Amino acid sequence: MNPVVTLILPCYNIESYLERCVRSILAQTFQDFEVILVDDGSTDGTGRLCDTFRDRSNFKVIHQANRGVSAARNAGLDAATGNYVLFVDPDDHIHPGLLEKVLAEARLSGADAVVFGFDTFTAGLDGVRTRTSLPKAIPETLAGNEDVIKVVLPRYIGISRADAYGWKSTGKLAPLKEFASVCLFLFKREILESNQIRFDPKLRLGEDTIFDSTYLAHCRSIRILPESLYNYTSAPTGAMRSIKNQGGELLRSKIGLMEAREQLRAAILARTGLDIRADYQGSYVISVIELATILTRDRSQPWPSNLASFKEYCRLEPIRRAIGDLELARVPLKLALPLAFMKCGAITPLFATIHFLNKLGVRLRT
Image (cartoon, rainbow, N blue to C red; front, side):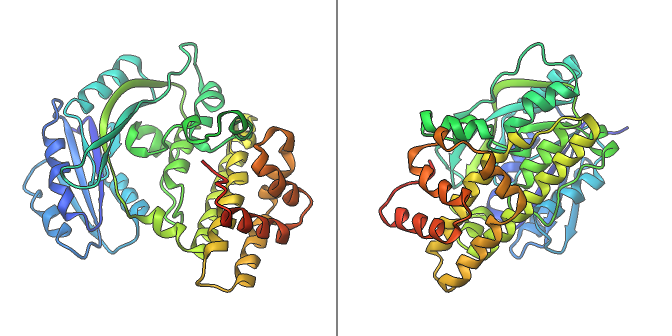
């Protein structure tokens, strides 16, 4: 008989944290689960530690060459047999009542997804809790796939055009969006399989954003649990920080994420007639500023080379459209001049202006 839920842990050089994570799973008040540990070519003792759990009947261990977190999660999905799927990153740990609470909500409501909150801890096994984040409520009247696409998906797909306008009055972007981690969702495996939803191994930025959004595009109902049930470890290093310190890699990663968003938009438009473009155009505007900031600080490449990379990105059709659709009067003053240059195609002055503002210490994004 298949387990009710499969927990998938992508493991790479995480030896010091893995045992704590597994202990938190074994301490669950709901026990009808399987755990799939995917050792993604670790070079420390992670693989050997994974193998110590093989003697447990509800544990599976997969060893593969290093291919990245997306490929590791996909390997877990391919081996999963539970009715539901939950992803856990092995440097994190979970509340003992997580499975019992989310599964009770899923069974009672019949929802296609259950979303829950998390606590953030500083790095280390004795990390200190720094923040509690709970998902925002959704309307009780929400019903059907189109409502999910219109109301819930925009919280995960990116920063919208309206968010960019809101930035002018609030001065902040982050509070306007949910934290798009797959670890904060209970997924129905039937929906994942019937729609062939998998992670894109080519993405190095935003893989969770695209996975969550693709799944939501096929959901008819969502339930929100306003409880912190997941303990997230905020690491001082990682893939995101590494990418942001490499101008060329950041450019390729941003283009990959842009293409994934556009492909998802096209699929939703073809299936439902709904156009979600405005729901993420603000992300493109912010990405221009972010990319210029990183490239103007990048000393590994000469200025002309970084400028050429920036021009390549700015000339992409979705980026040009996002800037063209933006009303300059509705964005923060400190962005008006850079975006005015962008609107008229003056990319070199734009690049130089952002460099100058950064030199002056003007923070273009908060």
